[in-house]
Length: 452
Image 1: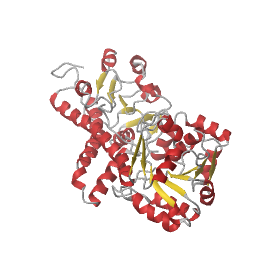
Image 2: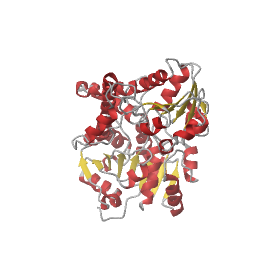
Image 3: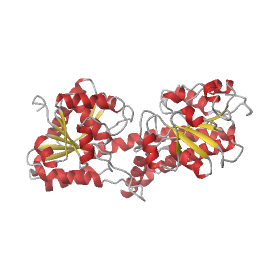
Image 4: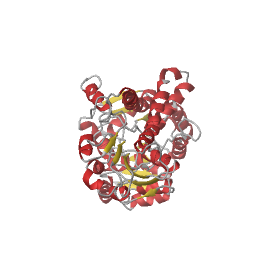
C-alpha cells in the first residue's frame, strides 16, 4: 500500500490549524483540497491571503497555489470525490459557561462529509477532543457513509506552536498515529511519507491514547510553567530571586530549562482551555482526582495576572486611577496575532477598569485587540504608547521589546518605571539607566539581599 501513488488529501476546516496543514502538505508534493463552510475565508485563501499572522505561511501559500497542488472549496461532495485521506481540522473551543470542550464543529464536519463517502477512505481527526470522541465518531461515520465499513477513522493530534507552525508541520518532533487497523496505519504513513523519510519518529497507538497525547502534553507544559510561577510567589514572600532559582533548576537534566521561565503565565487558544477540558472530562469518566492538580495549575496561572497589576500599583504608590500606563504587547505570545485568553490584554483591561489611562502596542495583534477591546487605547509603536507614561509594562516578549534602548525610552516617558511581566529584559542594564525595575518573583536593590 505504501508504494502506491500518494493519497490525495482534503483538509476540513481552514482556520489556523487547517490552513497551515493544507499549505504545508501541498508544499511536500501532495494534491490537497481545503474545505470550509465559510465562503469568505475560502475566497481569501484561494486568492493568496492568509487570514491570520503566521511567519512563512503567506509565501508558502502563494507557492502552492501557483503549483496547482492546492485548491479550496466549500463543497463536501467535491471533497469526498477528490480525497483519499480526509483531515478534520476544525476548532474545539471551550463551551460558554463550562470547562467542557465544544466538539460541535467536529461533529458537524464529520456529519457533512460522511454522507458523500462512497468509496474506501480514511477520516483523520487532528482537532483536540475529549478522550472517547474518536470511538463515537467511528460509529457515526460508518452509519452515515454509503461506503459503510469501508470508511475508517484515525486520530493524528497536532502539536503546532503559534509562530513556528510551518516548521512544526514540516519537521515535527514526532508523529502520533491513533489507528484501529493496519490499513489505516499504512494510509497515514503514505500521507506523511516525506516527513517520515526525513527522520521524524512515529508513535503508532490506539485511538484513545492518540486523543490523550495532546491534552497530556499541554497539561505537562502548563504544569511546568505554573510550577515556576508558584515558586515566584514563594520568592516574593522570602526575598529570594526566582530567576536565579530557575537557572539553578535548569542545570538538573531531569528538569531542564525549557519553559522554566517565570512571568505572566500562559494564555492562547490551547493551554488554558485544554487543561480545563481535560479536568472536566476526567471528572465525567470518574478519574477526576487523578488530574485535580490541573485546577491549581490553572489558578496559579490566573493569579499571575492580578499579581502583575499589583506590581504596577505598588510601583505607582498604591493608586492606578489617573495614571498613564504603556502596555507593550497584546498577543498571548510573540510571533502571533492571537489574543485568545491573552494575559497581556487581561492585565491592560484590569488596569483600565481601575481608572488608569492605558495605551497598548503590539507588532501583530493590534487589529484583533481593537476589535475585541475597543475601550482600550492603542498606539503605533512602543515609544508612541510610552510617551508621558508614568510606568511601562512589558506584557508580551516580542524581540523588538527586548531590544528597546532604556535611554531612548526614558526620553519619552514621564517617569523611569518599568514592570517586566515576562522576565525579558536585563534588569542591570535598565537600572543602570536609572529605571525602577520590577519583575514577578524578583528581589529589588532595596531588599535585604541587595541583589539583582
